[in-house]
Structure formats: structure tokens, C-alpha cells
Image (cartoon, rainbow, N blue to C red; front, side, top):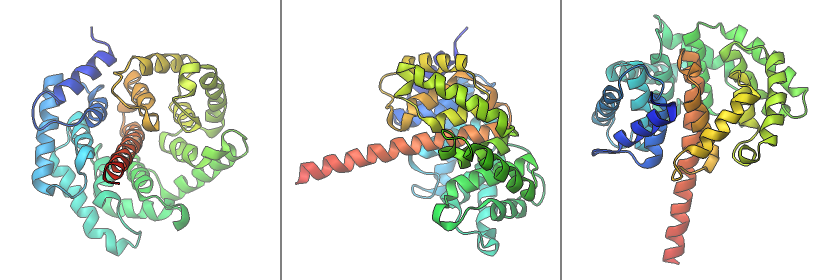
Length: 314
């Protein structure tokens, strides 16, 4: 029986087997979105390609999601059995209501929120519910990040959460993490994830400290991860034993996958465990980690390309 790593490798290779094909980084992040889906690999790859072509036809070359990110979106739609038209309809509905909501811009033209809302059964009034939630959880402008706010606002709506309950629970979790010397720098990220996944911050804090000790004791993992990832693992319920598995899998991943932004380690942790793929909230949290890691890679690759071009022309 194939291991999750074997399946991941096969999926990534299959995505690159014919044209058009994603680059190696996009193929990796698309494959990790597919690796725990309960469908045959051939069907998943074919569905991903179909979604990619449909998105390109509807959005052209420049409207989001575009570039490498379009492959990730296509894979998420394929993994969850969501029609492209359903996603595009949700995206359009969010865009039409944006100005009246007075909640600022939508990240990626509404694509991020639409994708999350499409992962589960969103009931009537979902657009109004999204903007109500976004108004409640949106931070002050000086630390506002619409990519984060849209992801979590949509996920909370999908989970049926009440805005006031989310705000109250986040404040409590931030206070718990803020009182700990090692966790305080990640109190907001931790609070967002705790509340989304329904975890008690006191328990997560205990897990965080145990995992941080284990992460720093692992010579390989220590230089390929940081405390923000420790917080993600703690909220997901990982144990020090799980970190050994993540470390070994990170080492086993194909060498051509860059470690910029600790992307290899994030890929390894998502390949190793399937529990985040079982429910929309977990998928939203995993998607946020995937996109954050991929965005860091793309930014670093772009920066190196610009630097090389500048050096060649100077």
C-alpha cells in the first residue's frame, strides 16, 4: 500500500506529466491539497486540470486566482468535489456586495473567501453572514491583512459561529497566550486558530510548550521551522512523537522543493496527517498554511529573479 509520501509524489508527477503543467512548486502545493482526498489519483488529476482550464476560461490570465495559485485552487475544488461554477458564483456574489458592506477590499477579488465558503454546505444568506463576521473580526488598519481576515471570516460562517462569540473567545485566547513568554509573539495567530478549531487555549498552550521543547531538541527540524509552526501544530493536536514523523518526512521530500518560508516542513506536516482534511474548518486552516507557505516561496523566487536580472543588466 502506498504511503502518503508515495501518493504525494505520484500526484505531483502526474500534474506535471502533460501540458499545460504547473511548475514544481505549484505542483507540490496542488498535490498536497489532493493527497488525502478519497478519490482515485487519475480522477483527481483530471478534475484539477479541468478546474484549472475552467478558471482560466472564466477569469483570463490576470484575475485572481492566477499564476501558480490557480493550480492550488483547482486542486482544492477537485479534492472537495466542488463545481467551478459554484465557486465562481460565490466569488461574484461576494464582489457585488463588497462596497455596500463597508468592510474594505476583498482579498484576491473574493476568491479566498469564496473557496472557503464552497468547501461545505453554506446556507442562505451566506454573503451577508460573511460580511457581518468580517466586520466583527477585522483588526485595526495598522495590522489588517485581508487574506487572513477573509479566510477566517468565511470559515467561521461555514462553522455556524456567532460573531460576538468568536470575538469573545479570541480575546480570552489572546490573554492566555499573551501571558506566556514564548507564546506571546504568536498570540493572535494562536487565538484565531484555537477559536476556529474549537480548542481550549489553556490546553493548546501546554501542548505548545511541549512541542517547542521537542522542536528545538530536533537538530534537523530546528532550522527548518519556527514558533509560528509550533503554534499551528499545537492547535492541530500534534505531539512530540508526531514531530519526529514530520522531521523524517521533511527530510524525505524531493530535494528540488525549496525550503524558503519553511515550505518543506509545512508540506511534510500536511502530508503526514489527514485530520485537517476531514472538515471545512480544518481544511480552511490547512489552506491558510499552504497558501502562506506558497506565497513566501513565490515572493522569494520572484525576488531572486529580479536580483539576477538586475545584476545581469548592470
